[in-house]
Length: 387
Image (cartoon, rainbow, N blue to C red; front, side):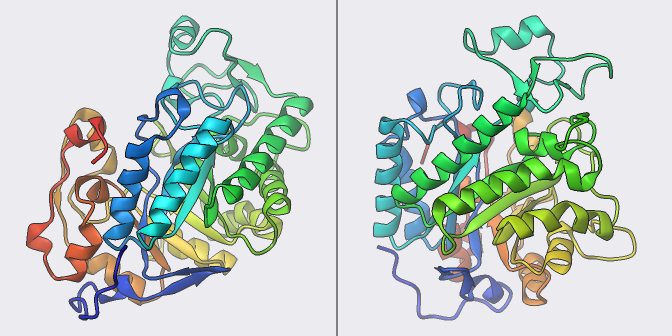
């Protein structure tokens, strides 16, 4: 079990180690393990090595672990066999072992629930290539059948019907309830990077003419309905996080909002539906979101919603974009003083760490102990196994 250190951390890192509370969830510190798909759960079932992987991070002082995305119980939610599910009896038993291991190590853990929609990893492929990359009979559902990497008139897969939408919302609610039953301390809805909820948010992929398409408020309705259904399923005292982004996979200049007012229009209905905290996914946490202010996306989200926020984006890494791992690149260890300073100033409330925690399970303990020289740098080859 993790035993908190009684020695004070270095002044440059101290803000990372203050306690924080989100609803009923009390956290020992401000460090969050970012959700990172590992695709190492054969058959969609997280095994003992997954439990050990997360427990190691809890034992070394991660305040909150957010799991890799777990596919909800809808036949169109995920095509990749080794991405974990959160609906079959075997998968739920596996997740129960994960939560028990994390709790035994003194940690807290949230399940990230996802439906990929028209999988962004398939964008730009021909229909034949998409079929080859999907299981037999798998159906690609999305708001409007739009692949943003194809000509505007092209359609792919099937546009979701009202029945499809209701079915997916119900699947999210079931997954939320099952996550609570499996012992998770919170859930996070994956509404970023061009996955299904984000496909409804984004005007490029949502061309619907019904109540789920149109202006910013209408495009947010599907996400708000998902949140509302999950809130009903888990009760008022169970924290719901929502992760969103401006950028999409392969479309890094994409934007949902070009101003704080537009950001408020996107997020307001989600707050009303029951989101407790927002996880604001950026590629580089230090970059300002809107002209005329140094605030990043998390800072602006906190300002316009009043909700707690998580900042993320190359934390703990030196001069490295987080997508560089796709090219097999590593990343040197970076200074945490800048993100800690901005945390201390109240720009955001929690800090998510990604690749640095894949590289070094003891990252929080080493940073707290002033042992930054001992941190292990990230190498893309680390992604092939759980350690």
